[in-house]
Image (cartoon, rainbow, N blue to C red; front, side, top):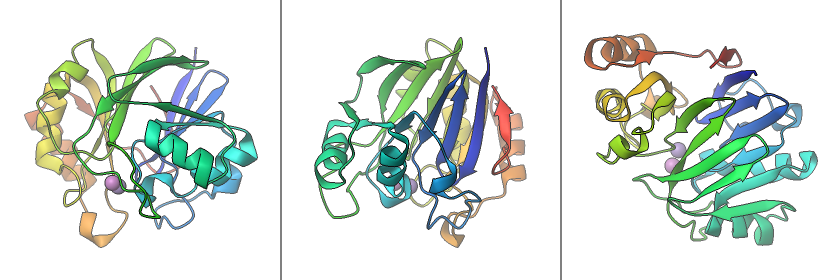
Length: 228
Ligand code: NI
Ligand code: MN
């Protein structure tokens, strides 16, 4: 059983679960913090949390080159199929779960917005709880703090990936409250330092988590796999 998570910059993550590779919110080409390009990735599934460009930008190209399945809410999955020519899509919606070859994926609520890059309606934003290799990981997506995170964490979480950039999502202080709502064993920060408006100090964030939350903060370096 092997489970590794690699931060590719911003909100883009590569999960290696056994033989399966799962990409979350691919945004690489125009991502100032990314160190790999979309052509360097070989993946089986792509999970999309919402329709904003910094979460969907490279998904269609990667999906079609790799013959990967794009998993998203129904509106975004339909947009990828009909407007982006993606061959394999799976539409789902908030609260729903599905069994995929690497594990179980449940779409969770997020408080954000979700318009697609061409102005199309992108449905509701979401996050994912991924159960794989005996672990449970929560990708919050772009979201504000919300108290129902207590329900998302009720069954236990090995890791929660939370946005900390502020401005467009929750910031560091709210991420500490989120970590406590979620009762996650570990938390990782995302959606920060990509551009000046969402600059955060990761070491200060980690200290905030250590002093105000129960979870262990883990600050990944772009491109370095972390064993979960
Ligand atoms: Ni967004
Ligand atoms: Mn975003």
